[in-house]
Length: 172
Image (cartoon, rainbow, N blue to C red; front, side, top):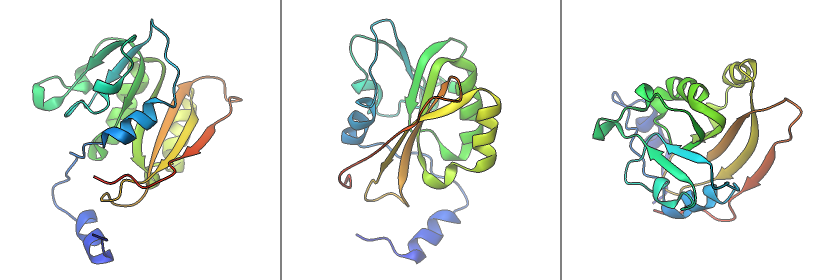
C-alpha cells in the first residue's frame, strides 16, 4: 500500500507519538554487517524491543540491553560500553543522543529519518567530539520517509565518513 500525503499528514500531526517501530531483521543484519567487532567489544541495544538488533549482534561480543517496557530504562543506564546500535524512539531522540555520548567509548549508531540530521544537532555532536563516520541510506517500505543509519564516533575530525545504501526496499 502506498501512503498518500493525507496519510503522512496524519502521522506527523498525531497527538501521541508511536515510537514502537520494530526494525526488520534483514535491515538489522545489514546495519550490523557495516562493522567489524572485536571479541572484547561490548555492544548495547538501549531499545531491545523484540530483539531484532540485539539477537543479531555477533556472538563473540559481550551484549547488553535496555527496554523501558521491561523496566530497564536506557536513560538510567550507568555502565560503559563500546558500541550502541539501535532504532531509538524519535520522540526522545535528544535525550538518547546525550545519554549515548555519556556511555560509549567508541561510538553509537541510530536508525533515523534523514530529517533528524539537523545542523544544530550535528554541531552539538561535533562540539562534544563526535563525528559521523558511517551513513547508510535505506528504506523500509511501510515507514514514513527514507531512513538513514548514522554512526558517530569519538574521533578526530579528519576521519572520513563511509556512505553506503541499501540496494532494495525492505518490506515488512
